[in-house]
Amino acid sequence: METKFQLLQEQKFPENLEKKLINSVIDKHVTTIWYGGVYTSSYNLEVFWLRVKDKEKATKVFSKEYTKELLEDSNFHIVLLDDKDFELQDKAGRAFIKLCLGDTLLLYKDDNIELPSSYCYSSDVESFKKKYIETYNLLSSYSNSMNKDEEFGVTYFYLKFFEHDLGVIETMLFGTINVHYNLTERLLLLERVFPQIKTLFVKDKENLFYIIEAIDRDPESARFDDWALALEKVQAKLHTMVIQLLDKFEFDSRPYKIKPKIKVKKKKTFKYIDQLLPLTNTKGVEEIYKFHETVTFENERAITHFYLLVLTTKEDAEEIQKVIDTFSCKNDDLKFTIISHTRLFIQEYSFENIHFFEDVVKEENIIYSNGYYPSIHWMDNYDCDYGESIFRLKYPLSKINKFIKKKILHAKKQSFISTNKLHRCLYIKLQVYILVHTTYLPHTSNLNTLLSLALYADNDNAPKLNVLINQLDSFLLTYTQKNIQQKDNNLILDNSTIDSLKQFFDFIDA
Image (cartoon, rainbow, N blue to C red):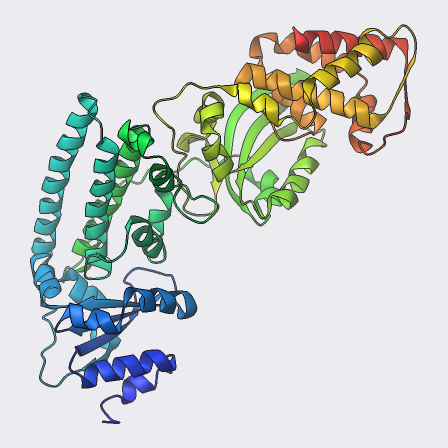
């Protein structure tokens, strides 16, 4: 007995797991054990493939609860395979058996049981792919018909559609369809071995999937198919993943491999990406989008100005903002105006900011990405209402207007004011100006960033606004930004400065 389990015991698995494996072999529930990583995956998830005679009996030993706990504690996953699974692999060309259950992964085999045949026919893999495509096209025709006829319930149909496609991926990577997990659990598990899955759905604060949770919370949104268009795009992306995975298995299972010549489109590289190294080297920066560009001429020199959106993790947002603020202070021939948000923020407030972010967060605008990330999901049936954003201003607009009226608009002589109050008036009024013209409320209070965004927000009136900005003493703006904590009256506004501020506030209020 010791010799039979020697290879298994040498691995030093958790004691409870080792005991379950050995007892399952002794009780004749498990006849073969393979152990190793998932094919093509560079992730460190280790899988035990257990060939069993009866899945129902084996599941009592390796329950869903035990398997999930083992995954969380030790990064081990258990997959049960029975005769039906190997019959399916026969129909799929045995690519999984050949590529995923090699002899080097074999930990134990019952002497009375033969190993499954690993002789692979790549033509059978191709046939399996064709059958998948036929089923996909049939399901697509149903969903297209439901969309065309505006029938209720297409949202739920898409969720079932996803399960079918995920089943194909699971069949090729794990050898069987994960019937005991719900859709969210299946997606989270696949993310560990097939990172492209991460591009499908935006996650919420609980590391769950935003759309799926939204549908669970609000069945009415599913009944009226508010998310149908977003789910249709996810389905198209998932379908492409399945085809690419099947193509890879078909090619890798061939006895002789001759790679076809495929012209790969070169991705355009942002010319000034090296200038952004302080930002791209900062932890928590996921992606950067370029959404606007201008060139101006001053004193016989061209100044190129880029507007960027940085998507960040919530945990690192504060440190990233410090780096972003350093860019706003530079006065070079190359300028950057940078705003930052988490992906979840854009998703949660998409109903308010769709007219701004839908044109910004586009694949063609990406100039930097450090991994696999999902697109934002836009709802179908809602009216954009940026009015609610007003309530998220840090200070009430009515109080800001009252202060400006008293200290600036109605000032008849020199006025004393604190940089704290002046900064507050400037940044709140600029935020509102940008909101009115773009339906987007910036979170930043950096004056340089807000002034640049204001020029972008109302392009037709940008020249006039630029003149008014230039009339304001740059030293005044810089000093105000640097001393925003100063609450005492540390500034004396002379008549010319008051006049410039009057014109500026009148313009952005018009």
